[in-house]
Image 1: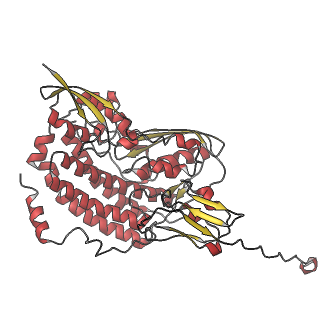
Image 2 (image 1 turned 120 degrees about the vertical axis):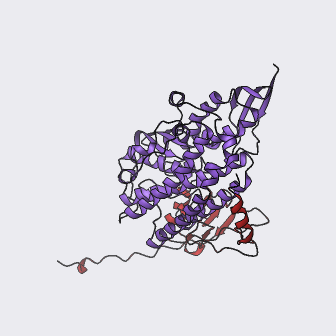
Image 3 (image 1 turned 180 degrees about the vertical axis):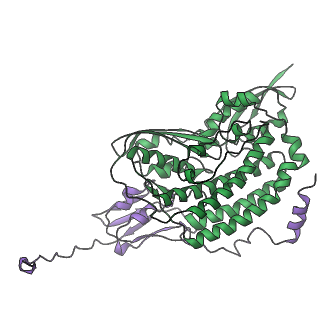
Length: 358
Length: 127
C-alpha cells in the first residue's frame, strides 16, 4: 500500500476558518490525520495585560465571529463573580434572549455550511436566508448584527421595549415556520442521509473519555449541557438537553436542528417571564481574585479562567473554547474513513478555528 | 428524494429575497451603531472618551483643544458616545460612507473658559 500525504489545506471551500489537516491516505482510505493550527492566532489573551478589564469585554467578543455575545457573557459573569456583583433579573433574561438568538443564527449558519459540504447548495442558501431574519432582529435591538456589544460588567447596555419584544415574537413565528419547512429535507432527504449516516461514528464511552463537548457529545448519547448549570436566567426557564444516540454526522445535525427549535422556545419563555426592573448596576472598584466561568456556546462548553490582582488590568485570562476539545474527535474518527467523507466529518464537529486560536 | 423541489418552484414565482442595492436602500435601524461624530464646539476635551475606548482610536489634547479619531481602528462599539459627559460625542444610525482616501478625523475646537463661581454669601443661609 502506498501512502500519500494530502493536505486538507488551510484554504478549503468548505471550511469557515483555516485549519490544516495532514491526511495520510492509502488508496482513498485515511490512515492518519494530523492537525496543525496557528493561521488565525491574534494573541488576544496577551492583550489582557494592556487593556483594562472593562475594555477587555470588547476584545473578548471579537474572539469568535459567530458566537460573540456568549464570550462576552462568560467573561462578564466571571468578573461579576470576582467582584461580587449581583446582576438585576431583567438583565439576566435579556442576556438569555440575545444568547439564544445567537445560538439560532450559529446553528443555521452551520446547517448551511454542512449542506454546502456535500453540494446541496439550495439548502445552504435557504438556511442562510432564514438566518438573515435573525440577524435583522439583532440589529434592530442592539445596533449590530453579530458583534453586539451589549454585555457590560453589571448587566446589559440596552433594553428591549414591549414593541421590540412583540416584533421579536412575530419574527420568531416566521422563522419557526420556515425552519419547519426545511425539516423534512434535513431529516429525511435521501441525499443528506446517504452522505451522513454512519460516517464519523463516536461511541458514548469514546465521547465521554475524549472530553468532547457540545452537540458532538450530545449526539453520542451523553446528556451534558452547560445550561444545566442554571446560570443567567436558566434557573427560571424550562430546559432539557437535546440528546441523540447514534453518534454519527447525521445525529449531530439532528441535535443542532432540534436545538434551533429549542432556542426559539426558550426565547418565547424568556419574553413571557421577563420581569421589570433596571438593566444594570453601577460597578465601582477593581477586581481582585480568580474565577472560573462556564457557558454553553453553540459549539459546546467554553471555560474562562480569570485572575485579577487589584489593578485595572487582569493578571491572566485563559479561554478554553469548545472546538479545542472537539478536535480530538477528528483525530480519532478520521482514520478508516474515505477521503471524500473528510469535509463532511470535519464540518460535523462545527469547527470555529478563530475561537480555538484566539 | 425530491424534498427541496416544491421550495425551488415556489421561489421561482415568489418575490426575491434580496434587495436591488444600490437602487433600493434600506433605511438604517433605530439606534444602530454607525459613525462617530463630535460636535467640537460643545466638547470639553476631558479625555474620557479616549480613556474608555477599547481600540484606543481617539486622541484628545486638552491644551491644544484637538480631538482626533481613526475611523479604521474604531470598532463602533459606542462606549465613547455613552460616556461623553457633555453630550457632544454622538453616534449616528447610518454607517460611515465609503471614501476614496484614508484619513484620520481631526477636529480643532476651543476651550471654553470656566464661568466665574458665584461666592456663597454667609448672610443668605438661614440661621
